[in-house]
Amino acid sequence: MTFLLNDPADFPTQLADGFIAANRRYVRKVFGGAVRATKSRPGKVALVVGGGTGHYPAFAGWVGQGMADGVVFGNIFSSPSAGQAVSVGRAADQGGGVLIAFGNYAGDVLHFGQAAETLKAEGINSAIAVVTDDIASAPAEEAHKRRGICGWVTVFKVTGAACEEGRSFDEVVEVFNHVNRRTRTFGVAFSGCTLPGADGPLFTVPTGKMGVGLGVHGEPGIYDADLGTADEVARVLVEGLLKDRPDDAGDRVIALLNGLGSTTYEELFVTYGAVERLLADHGVTVVDCEVGELTTSMDMGGVSLSLTWTDEEIERLWNAPCDTPAIRRGAVGEVELVDDGELSVEAPELVVKEEGSPESRAVAQHLVDGLEAVLASLREQQEELGRLDAFAGDGDHGVGMVRGAENGHAAARELAERGGGAQTVLAGAGSRWSEQAGGTSGALWGAVLAAAGSALGDVEGVGPEAHARAARAGLDALQRIGGAQPGDKTMLDAFIPAVETLEAEFGAGRSPAQAWRAAAEAAEAAAWATAPLRPRIGRARPLAERSVGHPDAGAVSFALIVRTIADRMS
Image (cartoon, rainbow, N blue to C red):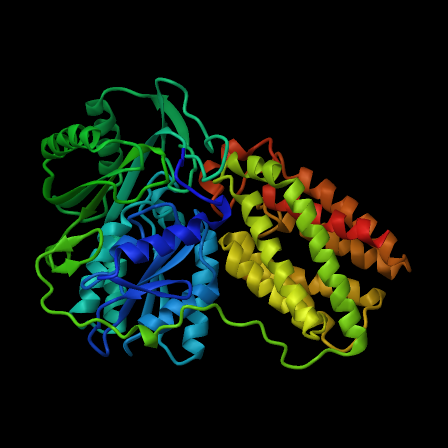
């Protein structure tokens, strides 16, 4: 339980500001995150890390000489937006390119991938790199689908050292891939975590049990097992990892024993003693270790073990000097502070480049009113959407959708008041929705709204055919960037029948009210029909069995939005 907070909605922003205030010798604030407070060598590759907050010292605790050049802050357990990542990337760039590294989660992949493309379009060499260390989340033959949960400590440290010593961009990427391939993590949970302001934990573990294969975004274990002694828990972790050791791994490892938030250091030390003895029994030598809170999940009870199978290069880069808030090794020498005046801390302003026509401005006002109604509906169902999401996710879908709609509506209203047409209003709403909601749904809804706006334009009014055209454009954008297929148990499963029904109804000469009512009925039926499906992509995939019997939260929220539109048309 989080006891020290003000407004839960402002908790991520306030914790980021407090972290920066407490670590001025290491970091400086920029829009979307923070960068090093100390100057770096011109021409070096910049390593930018990031993801949702709620995991400290991941990810902000690793910004400093010898490790990361910048961090992008997301909301609690939710990925940052592409715009925030672009801002941090620009500020961190030293002329050698920007490598954006993070855990393998759908929202992060979408947002950071978009950021890398934007930076490249601006002339900054950029790429993304994902950590895939969690052996519980996918089998070895599908290692590319695995989550990142704590092995990123070693991966980022080694990669940051490669950046610091002047490797080329391609060489840094290869170092990242090399150490990531040789890193494995396995964890168990004893209790769930509680989001700030929530009444209870995202999940519970029965007394005397542990959830095996935990996630760090409040996801429960993949299955429950008996909770034994510290030695027995250590055996579960060690034996699980040894079964999944890389090819040609050798017999030397860097070990990380990580507490998830409420596991005491004393418990960790007791457990680590068993870990090292068990590894020695199997002929494995621990060349170095870190024991403590390395990647937390708010107040979650649990422990994870990461092993990186080393070679001469990995060990040398791991031991290279670094100075960050959370990890310090050796001496980095004298450093010079950056000039704060060079850094931008404000979000980009909303701009109306050209006023819309009177007809389009009238449409824009209807869109503002519609977004206000959508926001009201999402607020009413926020708790239920979170409950559905918690079966196989982190339970924040309702919170994220409300946050996105709040900011999207505010942006739309501001742009409409400045004379923006339909396209300008929806593009601005989508940008702020994506930026503030983060996560997969934030990226997808941002793209959907922007695409729908492009279909409407800033000149024409909206006839019956424009409704279907805008809806189809939103669906096309969803499919283009989301990567889901029908039957994957996502929002797409409700989106497709809604758009197809809308097109059919308008094609048959139905009125907008009739067409949208039919579309809402199709979306609702399709959303509830996702209940027996097993999720095949996204954060819910590793916990697919827990999701069976419950509809997908994204599909349900989509149906709720379509129903809200239909009610306004009546």
